[in-house]
Structure formats: structure tokens, C-alpha cells
Amino acid sequence: MVNFSLEGRIALVTGAAYGIGLAIAQAYAEAGAKIVFNCSRQETVDRGLKAYRDLGIDAKGYVCDVTDEEAVKAMVADIEKTVGTIDILVNNAGIIKRIPMEEMDVEDFRRVVDVDLIAPFIVSKAVIPSMIRKGHGKIINVCSMMSELGRETVSAYAAAKGGLKMLTRNICSEYGEANIQCNGIGPGYIATEQTAPLRERQADGSRHPFDQFIVSKTPAGRWGTPEDLMGPAVFLASDASDFVNGHILYVDGGILAYIGKQPK
Image (cartoon, rainbow, N blue to C red; front, side):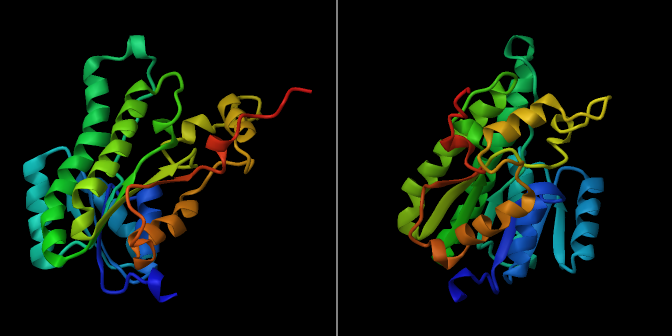
């Protein structure tokens, strides 16, 4: 369908060398977009460039710390000079530190908030002026179902993602009249490198208890995959979502809707 085409558009996907970011960028490329991405280290950018080449995608990568406002400004300026105006921004870069709250150093808490909340503010702030001048833009924040739920050891992550949910709605409120749509994707538990420790087999070959727990709490009966996010991401970046703004699209296999099975 033509409404889902991204032909001729430029997409910046932060932290998109692998995992969810790579899958979203691949989907955009397949829909016709030019891909630009960043990571904080050269070796990670190189890894991403190889992954894109292997997929047949001509992507451009930058070394940029998205928590550094001046570095972000310089990156965005270079993209606009050498590639063109950014039509689609995906704030994907994120970290998690699984530490019980009473054991977490305040610096660890701040670092998660810096990457998962402050960085999307910084990058969005840098990109929005050109979107206003162009007359349209799409901003997609990779949120989380943890903005709706609590769980032990993820206080910083949940707090940051809760803030990102409200930043998404505020960007919608402030810039909707400029024809900028800002929405979020809220993944459930996705099988990535980041979640691999939660899915490791036990010494006896049995499944990790957390793995079993998540599958039992998810109506779909499985972990999600990065590929599950490709369609929703294209929808939110395309003309098909022009009247969708300030919305968080949860891609979680139904976990947020499910209270669990009644004990027998």
C-alpha cells in the first residue's frame, strides 16, 4: 500500500547496530528509506555497518554519544548537510541496569535516565526545527511496557521509560500543529542480546525460571522477536499514521492485558 511507503525519506535510528534498532532500520530500508544510525563507540558502528551490508542496505553510521548535546547537534548538522533533512527519528538507544533499588548507586540510576530519557529529549530537540521547516516529521520513541508495570530490580529503567511515555505525549501536544507525529512503541519482553541472560538454559538443561515466568504471563506464549516490531515501526513512520499522535503502541504479546490463569 502506498500509505506505508517510506520511499525517499531519511530515517535516523539511534543505537541501531543490532537488536531492535537494527530490525526497525531494516524495515524502513525495505520500505524505501535511507538509513542513518549512531552508536557511542566506533567498534559498534563498524559492527552495524557490516550488519547492514550483509542485508544489502547502504546505511551511514556515526559515532555519537546521544547524551552529549553538542555531539548530537554536530551529528544532526552533518546528516542534514551530507544526507538531507531527517524525516523520521527513532529514539531507540537505551540501557538497563538490573539492580535492587536499595543496592543501586545514584550514579547508576542517573546513567539509565540519561540514556533512556534525557537522550531522546536531546535528539528530538535537535531534529524538530528542520521537521518544522519541512512541514512534516515522525518521531518514534522506543518505550516499554515497564512504563505501565513495576518489577523488582528495574526501578531506574521503569522510571525512565515512564518519563519517555510522557515526553512522547508532550512532543505530540507541542508540535502536532507543525504536522509532527510523535508516538511510541512499547515492546514487551523481546529476545535480544540484552535479554539473553534471562533466557539462558540452566546447568541441567532446563529453561531459566524467568524465561518460564515470562512465557506463562504472555498470552502469545512466547518471547517477542525484533521482527515483531518491524510492521508497527513502519506504520508509525508512514503516512498511514498521520492522524495517530501521542500514542504508545504496545507490542507485547498481550502481557499488559492479561492477569494470568486462574489456579486450578
